[in-house]
Every structure is written in C-alpha cells, then in structure tokens.
Image (tube, rainbow, N blue to C red):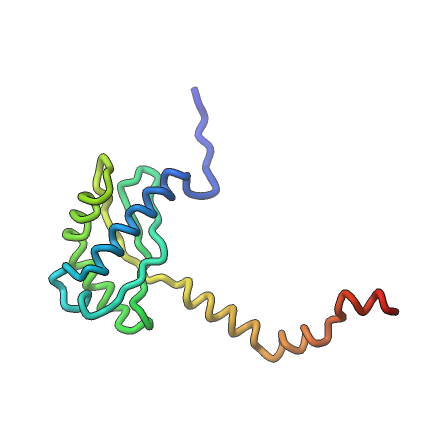
Length: 139
C-alpha cells in the first residue's frame, strides 16, 4: 500500500494546467467578447491561477488595471463565470472543465508595502550606518 505525502506546493501538472487556464482567461478578456459592459470597459490582469489537486477548481487572482472598480469587476467576473468556464473548456483540453473562482490579487499591495518599508527613514538610517564590506580591509 503506497503512502501519500503532503506536498509543499503544487505539482508540475497543476502548474501547467493553471498556466493554460490563465492564458485562456486572459485571451477571452482581452478580446472583449463578453456581454458584460463592466468587463468590456476595464482591462483586467490575471497574474496567477491556482488549480486544485484534482484540477476541478481553478482560482484566478485578478486585478483591474490601476486597481479601480475592483468590486464591480469581481462581480462581473462572477456573473460571467458560466460563459468563461465554457470558453476555458473549449480552449484547454481537459477531462473536466474546472469550476472558476475569482479572487482579488493582493500581491501588488504586498509589493507596495515592502517598497514603502524599504524607503522608510528607519531602514535608510540603518543602511547608511552599516559598514561596507570594503571598509574592513582598509583598516
């Protein structure tokens, strides 16, 4: 009897299918074939899609360009979920078309937070006070 080990991250297959789903979703959103006026009037970025281990659920992390009208865009994506699922099923050859979930991508906020920390006065003061590696050899 084989033991199953909990993996630390997604498998290569999950990553490959997630990337295919991401490309399919971004292609549909770029073409603007959706009947929803919110989606046709906004540029939506999909930086990441994560697949469940059984490949039946795809969680797409989305962000409208400029971060404006996030709630409206997420609502429009949820309303268009059935049409988007059909397009993904047509473009990505899988046994089952994955259910789609749309979540707000928070990686941009995290990057902005880290950038603000690095530019803070406290960090700048610590960097200026730290001796450089070349100074020790001169002494």
